[in-house]
Image (cartoon, rainbow, N blue to C red; front, side, top):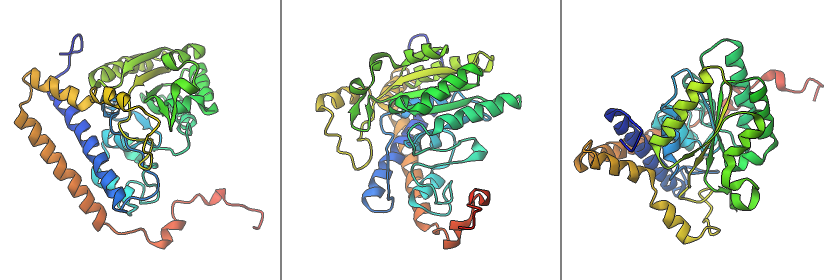
Length: 332
């Protein structure tokens, strides 16, 4: 199955199902944004689905995932229901963050999905904290921390990499290198742009590069890293080379990219690639694929209905889930 990578048939079908769910969900989010039902910022994950599915599917249920602001795909892959994710994007009380977080702050502690984070690199110190807690308490939990190539130029990145290495924390840093930090090409902003994974050498941890458009290769790379990390050998850095098919955010026309570049990467669509494998290997027929797509289409339509009919948070919710100890005590 795709060279040296061996994987069960039902797992391949599940990979296809999950990636299709993420793609359809994101496309629906784009439509709902234009209709005004989703407001604020919206960063779509279209084109990068193989990383979320390939990586998270390799985890144990007690492993943590922490993400950046392009977090919808990670949340869905970690098992958060499409209904509650869509409701959160709509700002409804039935959302996973009670309508207070929106697109960039999806969160579900029970599923150990420790949030999307709007501050570039802001998730990295938290990942270190989670890893330290896991090691301190003797848990068999690994932290999978997603970051973009842009976050590698933030101070938090270097601090996190350094501490993770010194303390041999159970953390996997997965950089989704989609070649652009907002509208700036990584080749124009990072001296090590051709081999980002080699930055791991500076922190004495393994650095790995993988084709982020191939769900099987991502899954294999993460599985190998998990074995090393669980064995107490310390953190691993993985660079998954990928491409976002849409702009940085919903309002970005991406005029800074050449049309030929987009066409080139579109031919590497991770869903189309896996679909071709499923058909060529006789695992699924065209009818089987259509059935899954139809079912997911209905699921996403139901998530919109659920979000539309869910109630808004009450005004009093502004005062809930607030840490009173953080308020000023100087009488102001």
